[in-house]
Length: 51
Image (cartoon, rainbow, N blue to C red; front, side, top):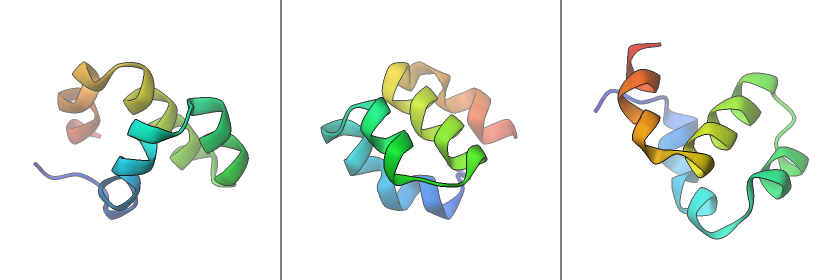
């Protein structure tokens, strides 16, 4: 899977922490969007890979 390094690196955090908490810790808007989508619906991974 060709995923951004930031998402791959923080993926375990997405599983443990709620999306709202991740949004508080991440300041970059794009990262906040990716984290929120992954936490809410992991089935969207194929769509993220295309970005």
